[in-house]
Length: 223
Image 1 (tube, rainbow, N blue to C red):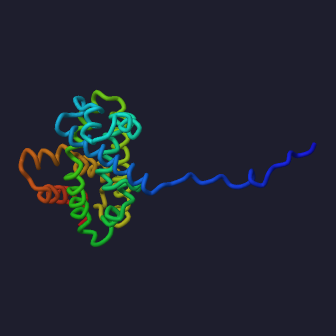
Image 2 (spheres, helix red, strand yellow; image 1 turned 30 degrees about the vertical axis):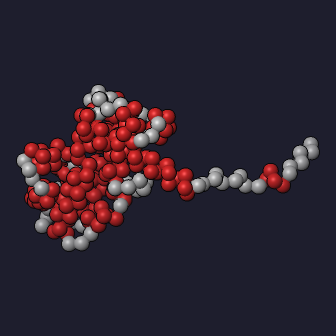
Image 3 (tube, rainbow, N blue to C red; image 1 turned 90 degrees about the vertical axis):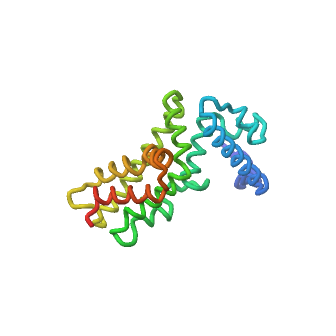
């Protein structure tokens, strides 16, 4: 059987998709505008009462652009929280970032103080919008799925941190990794604790960080 003749051009590698820096910058600007508008409206009016149409109007984009960028309101809120937590749109998770990797380095007796300070900074920029999502997840199945995934990721990150703390002998001898991870998850990852102290009681983020640091140190530290 004779093989069919193939033109050399057909054997060439497929062309890479065309990339336009100007177009990518415009798309990034649009995403930022939509997320900023959504967060402002979610915090002001609540998740249920905020419509995609209202977000589009606030962001200055068409509804078509709105839905092409974020297919659902739950997906929009999820990404708004994700970017707020990470601080940017880079794909690296929180646990992979240098500032969080630095928590386990340096003097062992300062680990929980560094963790608490970084956590307070995170809470200051994310706690209000996360609280909106937590409340709305009770009636929105898609948002509930996002919430459960975020909680599981946080617990996994804290368990990985606890393993490193155990290896460095930061944890008290009778404290195992899971106990440490669970304790950090309950105390440091709870937005309601942060909001009650800062909103209701008038605490500063620094005072909140001091409480978390002292509590974790007393409960877990070998020092």
